[in-house]
Amino acid sequence: MAVERGKARPLHRNRALSPHTRSMRIHGTLSRWNDDRGFGFIAPAKGPPDIFVHISEFPREGGPPRINELISFEVVPGADGKQRAVRVMRPRQTAQPGASPARDRERSSLVSRAIAFVIVGALIAYGYSRFAQRTAPAAPATEADSASLAASPSPYSCDGRTHCSQMQSCEEATYFIRNCPNTEMDGNNDGVPCERQWCN
Image 1 (cartoon, rainbow, N blue to C red):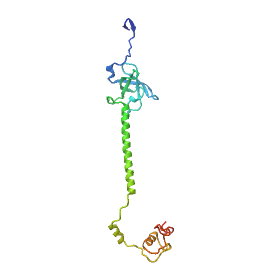
Image 2: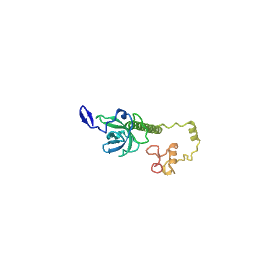
Image 3: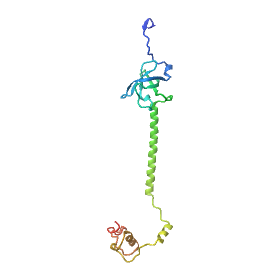
Image 4: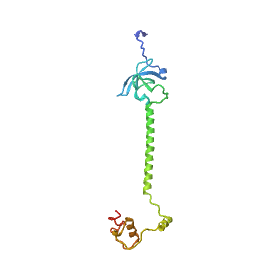
């Protein structure tokens, strides 16, 4: 018993962490955990009572918190004045001063958004290039192309036939309406002859 001003007061074995201890990493085990609410309590290997810890202070690697899991952590005073664990680490992880899982998740979210923007931009560029190719006007025929067409002999000749019943193919009928006079094979004048017999 300790005496102060003439009054007896019991000595508490579980005293709060000293400022020096707060700056050090402490080892302990996760004694209680509530999955639905995302928090639990850590039992330090030495010293004070169980310490509150929120799921945001756990690293993403290693899966969800597990009861009796061995961890290390730092301690800071919470908004209510009670101590709470921060920057929780699992074995074989390297401490990063000032880092927290919440900040890591925020950084990862920014990277994911940047990647998404790049992918969307690439898709838009690809779609535009395809559209431009489809809508680009055809290149005008060159003199060499015209000469080549002129030099190619045609298997047809104007021999007086003027009706579709006298044709043998759509190609032949097309030749006749383009090159021979007085043909009667394009009733609607759309440039396509013998639409019922050959060019359908």
